[in-house]
Length: 93
Image (cartoon, rainbow, N blue to C red; front, side, top):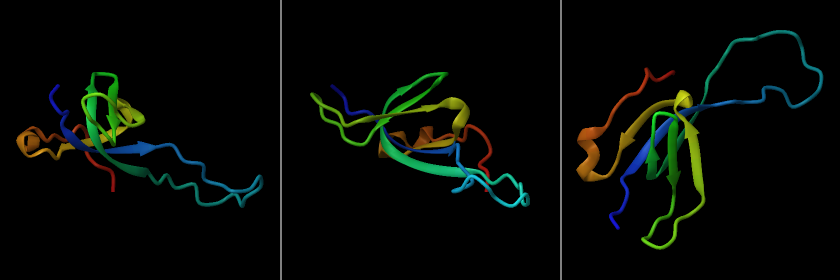
């Protein structure tokens, strides 16, 4: 079995804004919550990607599933895959 490519996925996660039940009614500015995930790319479909942080031919680590609509960019880190690096949508600063 061939080792899957290693990628860095930048994706926007949902975020709870308040730690208490009542907060002041001010500052409703939307600020993206970006997450950077690095791992072995097990699946890349039109619906999303599946990554794992540990891999060998018989066993893999726990998997993360990220929907395509949440992905801002995916960069291939494996030397032979660097040419395939791609920007899916503009990155939010």
